Image (tube, rainbow, N blue to C red; front, top):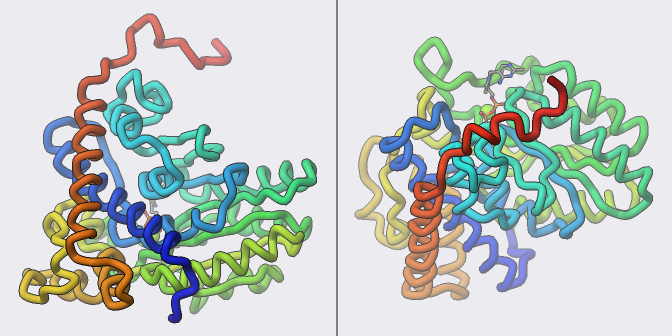
Length: 340
Ligand SMILES: Cc1ncc(C[n+]2csc(CCOP(=O)(O)OP(=O)(O)O)c2C)c(N)n1
Ligand SMILES: [Mg+2]
């Protein structure tokens, strides 16, 4: 895919992808030191979230799922306050009430994060309705997994979005390829009767595209076109972004299956080893994007190392901030409770 992004855009996307990768790798370590319950990582899907936000304005709205860290970081949420929330601490974005599964950040446009499969999709059509009533050209983007396509509410939400021409961008992150079944000890994956997920919205007259979710330029091309049309009132759009599931997200609990990412693997094949070498070499979106930027001559190995080192420092600070944050006091137990 020819590059349709400016050097500044590519650079911003690379920083977001690095930030997400290093945040998620840190969380695996953090989970070894703290019991914060079940959690989900965005490793392997970074190119999608980091690129989608490039087409958004500050006043657009967003919704996401339990696999939300990458979307929030891409949109500019503070990693320290995210760690605090994940650890259930008072400085967390949701005062420790949401944890990883319901981590949401209003300051950067997220209305809510739903732990229900398909939950965010129904809310997105509601948000799209509100935006249309307001008469501005803002849009609502909802990220959800392939599993959501099994839920009735998703059909209803897409149907209304189409009938009422609502400005909703449905981004289905299909990471089912390479998943192992729940019976085999894997994280639940989807079973959809349609040959392709992206065919389903077409039956409701929603413009729908299938894209390699690990290819930054390809994601940008389809998203920019969809968003451009939506801002002119063309109604909803649907993007199926498929990725090969990261081996560390195949079991029920995340594992550091591919090791801490060595960025030099982008130019030194001797570093690509182990059981999942094939995933790193062919499917890792970060390694792919670094190779692409090096080949294009817009990034040097030294510059990459320097930027990564700054991001690793930022993540270490975020972890320290979260771990130093206090648990919410007992006197705050009823804060935010609206009915007794
Ligand atoms: C309504 C509902 N049913 C079941 C679950 C349990 N559950 C949590 S995640 C999940 C699979 C989701 O897969 P997918 O939507 O593809 O997202 P992924 O985690 O692969 O990104 C299921 C069945 C749930 N959270 N909500
Ligand atoms: Mg999935």
